[in-house]
Image (tube, rainbow, N blue to C red; front, side):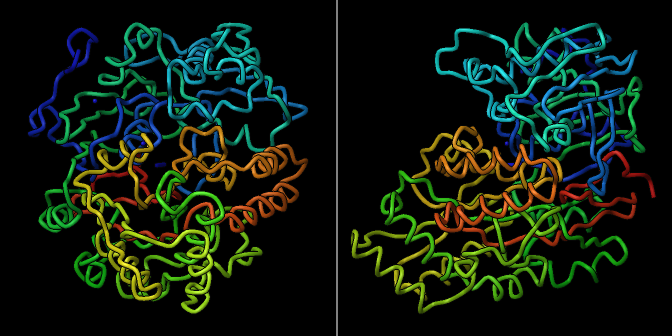
Length: 524
């Protein structure tokens, strides 16, 4: 995933200081300041997402291995992959004591889809009948025609076309339910969220910590095995790692570059290495000088072939990154490592210079090639190495451009005001190549950070969703990715081999997407 004054007393929530008085046995886990208030349909980035997924339970959930299980859903049935009937389990409650009903889901989805609510995850509802009407710039209706509440515990979903991927995605955050209290003041609710998941919200001290405690009313398959979570916000991974070694932080999902050669020795059996569904790309919006149209395609390809991915992966990441071979992740079902056009993802200095010269023939290069990164995420070393590789190959000035925090860089990227290349990536929300591709490259997606717009790509993704079998879907996805390579929509750089660690106080493991399996963090 690429995505904050309190009303604690008024909402019946207990306060908790960021010292440890009200949550003395909380597991402390690495985090950063979320970009937005904690709303499921408006959280598309890692730091907010790791909290939101603890606070809510959806129709389904994903286990540590990426397996899908029903959670609030008692059943989800379909005969044609287009029309679904959902029955939810009885007696589920939100943490304010109100009932989780079919209406809780339908109202939340309609809110997320409605254009005037400007939710960044609105694209997730794009397959539902009636989405085009509610997502219009000036919508004439407020609710999607494809959603109908048929009882307290039942509702139906009609899609525009059959979708092989839709039911799998129903554990994804935009599909979480909302209580009636949310709709009274959505901004205030996002600061003091009321969910139905394995944890309940306690307090958010901005730029410091978010505290959660187990939800005693949670009835699903991922109950908390700890006494609470403190998402502790850091300005640097180096500081977080020092805290991990000192026993002041219990889990760290990203080991800093300067510790990758020693962390296994430092942590022993508390070190974790695992291939995960995460990637790292260089994005460049078409409004950036020299990167529109045909010139932009050529320059992105030249830049891609200028990056010595293998060398950077070894020298900086000590093998905890591997060169990207597509726009998704090699851990996902259906991955193909030799798509037509993947030669542009291979270090080739001579070809890079030739293609750069072709771009210069359209418009001569001027200026500095800058790559923005957030300093609190441990990205400086690899971004500077990428810039150095580009500079040495193409003979231009290339450099990293540091932003202090994740939130600051995300605000400029999502606001389309950054004006330079930037590092970004995706961490899977559910284990599907289509989830990576629809979120990042469909023209109507609010999380399409690079402004990619190709109607043929959109058509192919729709065809992949409507395929009768997974095997056929994978073939069409390969065609869609071949188109991305031809356009060089962005510059894929690495897939992740996650390097993480935990303290002597706990036992912990990583999930399929590279985040900790938070509910199963247990005392040592």
